Every structure is written in structure tokens, then in C-alpha cells.
Length: 498
Image (cartoon, rainbow, N blue to C red; front, side):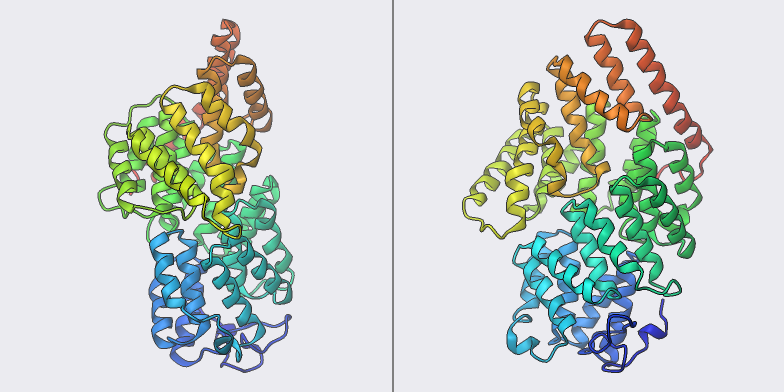
């Protein structure tokens, strides 16, 4: 997708390096010719999560190997994927791009991009987000700064910034700009994470109408339905657009994960496993962290529900172990531990936690993953191990003090719900009826349409010897699940997955 906005020659009025904050921009002023064309294509692919973002970024670096902005772009892609080995490679490629002699001739905006990439490569993700926020305040039409900043907000679980970073720039954009739609999709996700569901759906659907294959916008609407318990609506929404999101993009596994969550709430665990095998994790799947964590999260929900999953845990745990990850991103660590616990590989889980504790003794205070690991990652990992070994009170003791701070290690409300459900199940397993009642009361009053909440409520009532309440809660769960099950029965895309 191109436009006149992208056809500006380097250094012309409106180019990346020379225009004022009210104008459009093309490639960085320090990049021209063939490299500029690769930059345009890479940026467009990034905004729409198309695979060619990788090949175009690599082509950009080949065409302009010494350009700091070309190196920064490549670094951003590696960093957003949370792949430790890719980041190590990007650190080598980035080299001395941030050195004063390299950046002296760059426009201020380009220097800020290079500084943000350098900070993140050094481990300070929060500093990178701050630099990009400052860049956006001065240059709100910088789509790269907005896209990367948005992903940083997601990786750090900063809901308000997910909303306001993009919302604060939108008024500077022309609604006819071809990249205005993807910004709406980002904004919709931020609104959803802040609980503004009505406005989020309105904005998200507008983004999808503008670009039917805007998979991040589709994902924003899907999150909205998930958080409101609108499983039937979500299933129909995804079914109707399967050709736009279900393949050939970097978000397809995650959106299939959402489809599986709808099926799980609808009580169709056989469908969940078919989607898992068809699209979430199968023989052709690569061991990418972002995809493995979706697989772990889905199987963990099935484990909490007592659903047998065959050999899937063993295969998934082997995939995590084969990565040999270091202490790069605590959110990934938690999902690796889920897999180890699910497979009964408790020694691997303990080794991972011991490694992270040793790393904390040497990690500098500016490393963003330090606080994520120390404050949230390790307690959650410990709780998962305790739960898997039936030490439910210990799991409660680890999770209860941090339950209102889980966002600090990243992810969305929907993703973190696996941990929150673990706390509920631990309270029930430990026979802590008063705590379980409080936790479920919180959940039901925030999300009254959620079959899981009512199923857990029925088990709580049984624990307390209240047969009448157990029957009422069970009937409520069945009634809510039936609506989603009916939608699954209607849908064509809900068949198997891939």
C-alpha cells in the first residue's frame, strides 16, 4: 500500500528529516533511492502484520548498511518479537549506530529513533517507550514511532499508554491517510484494555471497514467481545472474516487462540483441541515465543478445567526447553513454566527459576525485565509449580499479594486471566471458601457473562454445602455457554483451525 505521502524524495518538504509536526512524511531523510522504497514497504507491512516486514527490513539494511535508521528499524522488529537470539543478532547489526559520529548528521527525529532502539537493546524498554512518546508529542504523524511505542506499551502492560499514546496523536492525522486505519486499530485495543468497550468496538469496527485485513484491528474487536462475555458475537465476527485473519500474517496464531477461548467458554473442549492442533500448535509450527505462549496459555486453561490433553504438554515443553532462553522477558518465562508443569517437568521449571534468581543478583537497575522478573515473573512461576504439585495454599500465598500488579509484566487482560484463574482454582483447591467467594464475587460483578465464573461458583457452593446455589450457578453457566455453542454450530470457520 503506497500513497503520495510515501513518494517524497529525501530532504524534500515533508520528508522524514525536514518537515514540521503538522505535515506528512516519507522515508527518513537519511535514506533514499532503493533503500527508501524498502523502508516504505517494511513500514506498511509492520502496520498490517504482514510477513514481508522481515524481508523488506533486511533488504533495507542491505541497501543502506551504514544508515542508523535502517539499523534501528531492524532492531525494532527483533525487539518486538521478544526473541532473545534475534535481539542478540540485532545488537550486533546495530553496532555503533548510536555513536555521536554516526548520528551527528541526522534529523532530531531520526536521532530519537536511534536512541529508543539503543535503549531497548540495552534492556531499558521503559526508557525506549519514553523516548518514543517524546518523539510522538513533537511529531504525531510518525507512524513508526506510534507502532513501536504501542507494542512497548503492550509488552509492559501499560493500558493507559496503549490508549493515550495513539489517541494523543490521532487529531494530527488526516482521516484519508492510508495509515489512519491501523492507528484506529491500535487505539481500539488501548480503549479495550482501559475498559471503554463501547468506544473500542466503534473504533475497531471502523478500522476493519477501512482495511478488512487489518489483523490488529480485528484482534482489538475480538478482545472487546472476550472481555464482555460476548462469545457468540465474537465467534460470528471471526467466522465472517476468516479469509482476512486466519492465515498469512504474524497474528494468525493469536487470533486463533482467541477463537479457542470462545470455544472453551462455550464448553466445546473438543473444538478447542481441534483449533490447537490445526492452528495454534502443530507439526509445522516454529518455536517462536509469541506462538508458544499462546499454546501454553490455552493448554493451561484446559488443565485448570480438568480436560485431558494427551501428549500435547510433552511436545510443548520440549519446544520451550529447546529454545534455551535466558532472562529476556518474564512473560515468556511464565508460559514456559506452564508447559513444564503441565508436562510434569518440575525440575526444568525449578532450573529456570534458579537461573532467574541468579541473574537478578547481577542485573542492573535499568534493565526493564529485572523488575518484571523479580516482582511478578518469579512469584507467578513459583505459584504455577505449587499449583501443579497440589500445594494450593502456597500458590495462593504467592499470587494473592500481586494480583493487582500482574499487568507490570506485560500482556493483555485476556492473557493474564490464566494467572487470575489459577488463583481462584488454588483458593478452591485449598478449601479457602471465604477467599474464593470474594474472588468470584469480584469476577462476576465485573464480567457477569462468563461461564467459567459461574462454573467455579457452582464448585464453591458445593464446597460450602449449598446444593441449591450450586444448581443455580451451574444452570447460569450452561445458559451462557449455550449461546456460544450455537454460534459455533453455525460457523464455517470454526471447523478445525488451519
